[in-house]
Image (tube, rainbow, N blue to C red; front, top):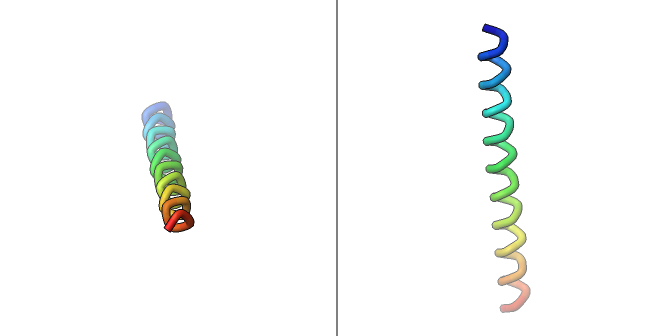
Length: 37
C-alpha cells in the first residue's frame, strides 16, 4: 500500500513539475514576443 501511495505521489509531483515548467517557458516566450513588438 505504501509503495502505491509513493508512486502516485511521485507521478503527481512530476506532472506538476512538467506543468510548471511548460507554463514558465510559455511565459518567457510571450515576454520575448512582446519585447519584439
